[in-house]
Amino acid sequence: MHFSWFQFIPGLQNLPTHVATAGFGTLLIILISLIAYSVAGKPEEALIPSQGFSLRGLFEVIVESLTGLVDSVMGHGNERMVPIIGSMFLYILLNNLLGLFPGFSPATDNLNTTLACGVTIFLLYNYEGVRSNGVGYFKHFLGPLIWLAPIMLPIELISHLVRPMSLGLRLFGNMTGDHTVLAIFLNLAPVGVPMIFYALGLFVCFVQAFVFSLLSMVYISLATAHDH
Amino acid sequence: MTNFVRSLFVVASTFFVAIPAFAEEASGKGGPMFALASALAIGIAAVGGAFGQGKTAAAALDGIARNPAAQGKIFVPMIIALALIESLVIYALIIAFGLSGKA
Picture 1 (tube, one colour):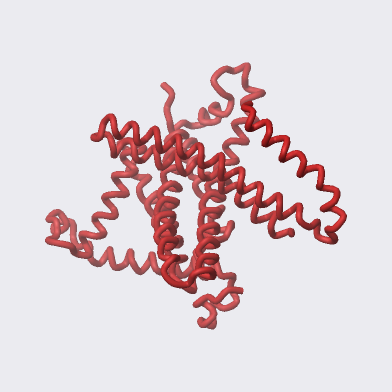
Picture 2: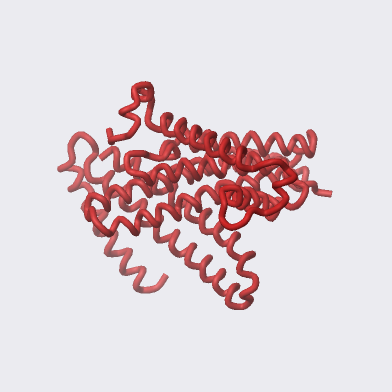
């Protein structure tokens, strides 16, 4: 078993590492959001941009970029998707970044965590599809022409069931592979060379969180597409 | 197929003839075939993935070269395409991990 900082905390010692890391990551997110909430101020004074680089400006940048991302991929009128997509993005990003610190391993290192995120997105886009299209959402599965239905139905079902699996496996594989490569290089050349792999790990963390949220947005917009 | 690929195939098939000899030495766990399988899995997957991602990046760079103002709009679909192609390589990597755990 590798070393982990959670060995020193008496309550968390017996939990599996990824559960303890996920709990720690959630605690961090709650702390950060409490700080952001207290810094945000009343709506009247929030209209005036803050001077220079301040904490409030930082949180405003994050929220604005997330909102802009959701707007650009899903079009206007989808502001209610911003909380779920934004929190998924930040959760995965924070858990990935925790793995870069020595002694921690990312919670997304384990298939359970990533598959849970994938299943959440699966349930979410199905719910959104039924909510916006009614029961006619299930006509999507039958394909374009009605006599193609017996062939299209298994294909569509399988491709829909594969989506959460692929979301989870992609994130899990990237994090595990990256962590393994980093461990190997730290064994080979302890000084200097692993810096490149830390930079690669940082890049991979951002890109994987970004791709996860992008793909979930694409699935949701596919499910809620009205074919008039 | 080109002549080079054909001759490469002939050379590779002579290795497969030697498989019964390896099987004699291996005992218990199934021996070197699992190691060979896991190495081949990730190796071939990496070749295919590199070809696909190379074409994606080339097309994206061509688009940016034609129209530098479209860089923001080209970047996001390029990242999606790279991640989707890479996910196939990751599936093969997971199989390679599973196989190397058996040998």
